[in-house]
Image 1 (spheres, rainbow, N blue to C red):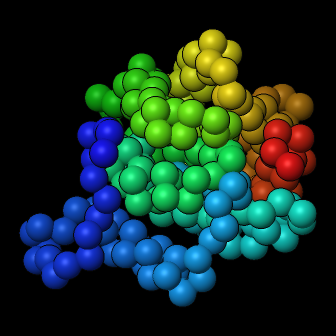
Image 2: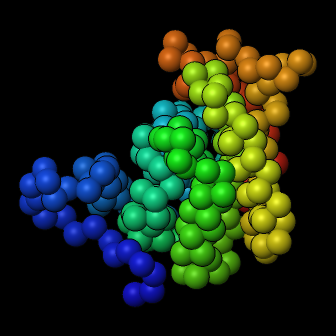
Length: 215
């Protein structure tokens, strides 16, 4: 098997041995056993903005979508579990929403580091699924994370520029549409924590993402 990580093998683990999100991954595996997804679907993977999009299939009728976002994850977590939550599905398209938690995790995490992490994930997907379209959904503006917006903007810009050099790759910019006419963050799009979105936020995502989806 190629790559740096191996699939999770369900087995008893102590709290000290259990890596982050291990139980989420086992839950996905159980669900796949009970309801095996068909190959060639569209896969969502990343952090809580996808995890909380429980009714995503209602937003995109006619598109077969598998949602494997796990809340709180950073790009290194998605890399760790790529052989569990991406490659087995053999998707025709992968939408990635991740990187926001990385930037919020500490001042030492730079936009350049997030870009490099995404490139690592991209490389794993591309090496194993050469024909899959890889779509990066831009990191969104979050009022509770106003202090990191300069890093968010920088990471989005760098990833967008790099994706332009890659075949079968897309950058989906949802950032600008979530700002008002004065380029201020729209508080009304978010729930009380000022981080996660209300349906009004997801409605914006639907409008922007739909033209990028592969039939």
